[in-house]
Length: 221
Image (cartoon, rainbow, N blue to C red):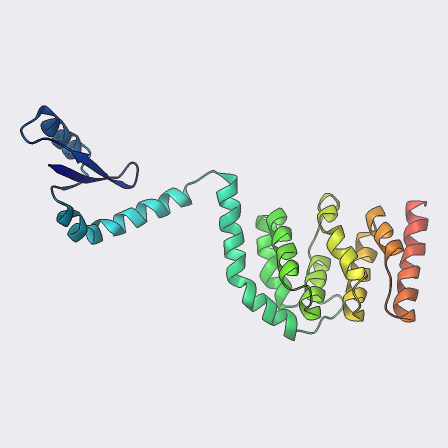
């Protein structure tokens, strides 16, 4: 006789092949009853009753996920929440006007995530850039966002390569926003990125040289 039962501890259906009339049969039945699991004697019973067990399985899985302390799982869940906002964020970046010193709706939407988990938020922004490298509105929007967020000095290094890519962009709107970030952050890494950049216009080059001179004097280089 095949004995099927759902084990709540492992969230799975257990299958035992037990000879009728054997001591194993009695033991198996006692174990099933003691654990208050779903008990079926035929394969058809499993199929017909699985729909009843499924809500409990899903509930158990959700609770286990919610109660996890595994940082990898928690980070994946956090990124998944941000991914749900991605299409709206991209839409806003493409349609909102960037005004110096003004926090737009993108900043308002992302700031709570940044306060909750700054590292994963910055990682998500880098992933967003990776998927939208040729979209100048999104790229400049990302740069403006990290300009507006209260990025701490220890976290700036995570985004320097992104800022450097912005400095070397062929599009003036992206370059200007990237220079604005370096002007705010004022680190040696930003200065190095400015010195290595190629600018798209005389005006942009002049703006960058102004910031370079300021940072060199400030950093004594």
